Length: 279
Length: 260
Image 1 (cartoon, rainbow over the protein chains, first blue to last red):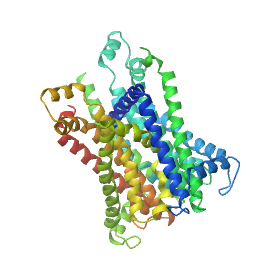
Image 2 (cartoon, rainbow over the protein chains, first blue to last red; image 1 turned 60 degrees about the vertical axis):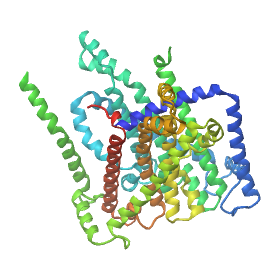
Image 3 (cartoon, each protein chain N blue to C red; image 1 turned 45 degrees about the vertical axis):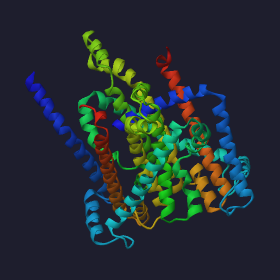
Image 4 (cartoon, rainbow over the protein chains, first blue to last red; image 1 turned 90 degrees about the vertical axis):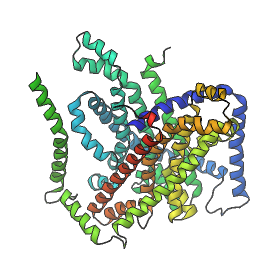
């Protein structure tokens, strides 16, 4: 369970470094902008001058056009962009919420109550190393290829990091606080709810973020294998109809929405865990 | 008092077996009956024995495992080299970071799996695109962790090495990298699970051999036991690999090992 903890700490540190870097300021910003602009120009030039087979490439301008057009155009996969996005959101949120509703309490209980830990852990250790995607055949057999099957796959991909983080979080509860609770005569349950759970919350939230990221990237796989709508479906259809502009457009939209989701998650964390950010 | 704790100990020792027993009986209960849709554990075991003797798609079980292992190992190996190099460049050369970090961050949020269609259009369905995807997916976490690990080196270390007149190269080799190793290994661990994930999905979409291929094959030919064998094998290999990494971590940086 160590590596996840490490990674969470590393993420925190990364944020700090990035914030520090923000102050370094304009010069590096301009350099970065130059890098991106050069990359886009190079990409455009490579396609415009047909240095590669343009059947297999699309220029940035074509991609942007494809995105704009896709808002109203239903070809080639039969749905507009918003419809795909909504379908993907529906699937990923269903799986994600299931995974946090089950994963977080289970992890907290496992970390606090030994019998629960002993009981759940063997099963968890069996499930943990199996990549979520490999559940697809079983999910299809039980649940068909609808929303449920995909949500099931996403549930697995989000469940594991949530549980591990909640577990680690509550294991890191400060013993001094627990002892204070005991001295004041609180019962084990009371200590669990008033000391253990709140102090584990930052780690739990880190788990939510990981699991949201996993959910979003697994979604694409689930949709590419079995779906009739959604962004992953749009990409694979784009490939089948050799609409490379649409494929790249889909990838960019997935990336952008992923960033958006993690920003929203940060915002929620800041709101709900206010006490952590008061200095 | 003592007696009660004895009962508690015994029940704690029994609980793990109890949960596995419940799991197995649930599986049996779902899988037995007239119109059962999934195979029982016994079926899976029998299928495994059969598989040892008769190859699937003209490829023996060892070969399937070997093919997937090779893809993961080659991909991971390249990703470790590229990731550490890139992370070190980001951390040590500010100009390089300013120019390329935004580009890197632009690619980062796109899940590797979303690259599969494009990569198959570019490179076909052979060996290279699969390894390429694994490399792409694994490089990201390793680069980030190397970058952060190196940036996290405490300033005091730097001062001490300056006091002892260490050269730039000495500082890198003896101070910076050793203190970054735990972070790098954490990155490699994270990369390992995503490596299997990516490989599986690219094998499930297009492959002629490998464990991901077995999963789709089982699902397509109504042979779920085969899919389950592949799942179990992947799970086993994955946990063995991550155990290996933990072992490596202990060897490389014994000072990081927690005292349990």
